[in-house]
Length: 187
Image (cartoon, rainbow, N blue to C red):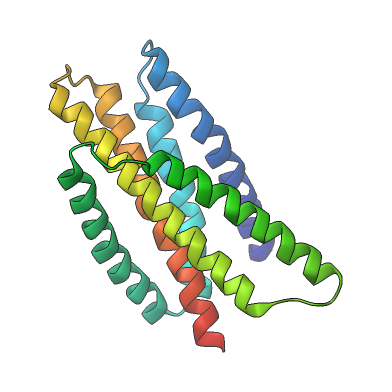
């Protein structure tokens, strides 16, 4: 059955992405082995996951999300590059958003269990999570800019690790936007 094969592919890809999300940073930090193969496997797993979007999400939603992601990430990159490492409190902002979103999500889950689901709170959480991913992307671009500015010897692992970070950030924003846009189109 094709549907069963697709589901198995999705599960294997999801597990692979989780494992590779741990393997890539650890291998890169140790610097003993190349992260090229794990990075390629991560991209293949992500591609498998994203291919499901093409099957179940309308093309115009994907196109809107891709355009918004490109513009958003372009703006985020400019902010990260222009900051030159001087964004006071960015790490604290990220932690605060993360903790706040966690508390709000837990609160909304409890409210949902008691039958008092708050749709506005759900949407606030969605957009706060999108904002969190954008702040994380600014932080990542800023760190990559610092690495480049240091003039550190750019070995393949460092370059691949920076590519992995940027790729993960862009895809995270894209997926969140596809989800939000598809929810809006259903209403």
